Length: 126
Image 1: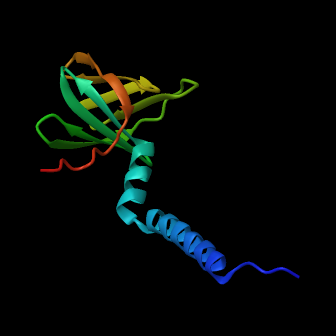
Image 2: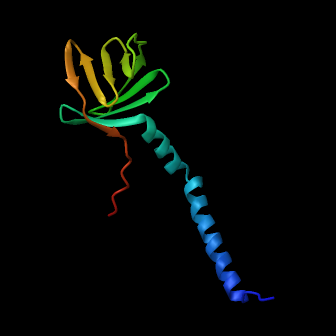
Image 3: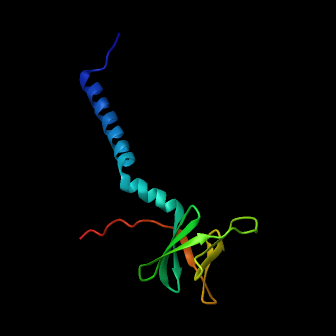
């Protein structure tokens, strides 16, 4: 019966513990987990050349307009089939399908461009 030298077993255990530790760090990092969840329901677009962020929650579209103004729109049921969405607060209305969204305000319609899932940028190192 042959056995592995003790140093090989110890090295293998260290590698296994280190790998588990790395996995645990990612799963225990609440900030990273929160960012991943937000990315699933949050989109960054351009509106007239400025950044426009919209987060969809149950029955709401929460918008961060250029200039850091926050607006909440409420879902309006649509009779159309498919993935047509419509949200309004009486002053603004967000309509669209998928990443093709338009913002309606004061009789004007503006297309949201380059919509993509929101990604939190890493902090800039100085």
